[in-house]
Image 1: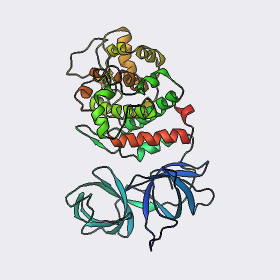
Image 2: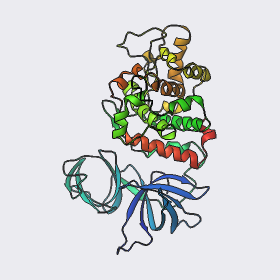
Image 3: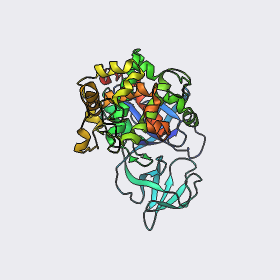
Image 4: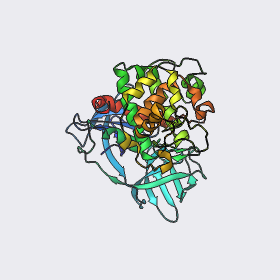
Length: 405
């Protein structure tokens, strides 16, 4: 059993005969303290369970509201990225990026499945199209992204690393936002979502220490939509159920949600992106660079911005993560002008951690700097928020702050 696996379980005290089965995705594991967290695939209800030395169960735990639960029976399944076989377990990913575990009845002439969670819906697929369905959410004609075979994996080992940043990377790998196809941009490079998750962990830890830049990022919606990106995007956040009226962790996380969308619009998630070749801004002050196509003249928006430029001088923080799946042509390496403005372009591309923090502060004070913000084409995705929330919990559960600062 590991992060990203799916748990089919029954709960103690269920009066149904046979007991109802529930499916939960494993979202974190702590072998050192012998507990794991999971989320029901259908309702999103979250749980924490202690497995101790009794790896076969029953397991005691609580949900996110503090109510006690006991897992009576369980089986864990690991997706394998292979074609499903008849009379086996498989994982279906729908076009909305939601994933559900099912039992495969047949694979020819079509794939016929029955899902493990109530109401145990039956569907049939022809390649990627639903041809039969008794599930109101996914009707005939809707699409699936994939169906992959799974293997039983009930063994609990130390392979789910506790106390390292691999915990964060595993969360990203199993997240819906890592597979989301952004409008006009497609799926993000693997390193982009991982890098943004790592940077959220870093800034989250800085906020807990009272860091000035992180505090500025996390301030409440100012209401000044001519300057503050969160104020300008207020309706989009309201529609997504994200409240930014109070300064703190939630507002910081929602800022990163917006930035993930902005980076996909501006650079398709490529940390080394140079200026837009079709633009005429080629001075040291105005040439755009990096993930968010920010330019040096944005520094006037806050006294914190020149400080960040100095703090990150000669750094390459997290570039090894952001570069996964990214290829940049030689033209992107060119920097324009001279002096600090030219160095800003180089640093923005070679140190994505700097680009993230600089843009995060600037976005709260100079939102007109970015066309996709002005036009509201940077997407606000609840999947990003869910992933970052899992990262936040992992940072706290496994004391990761010393590793990401």
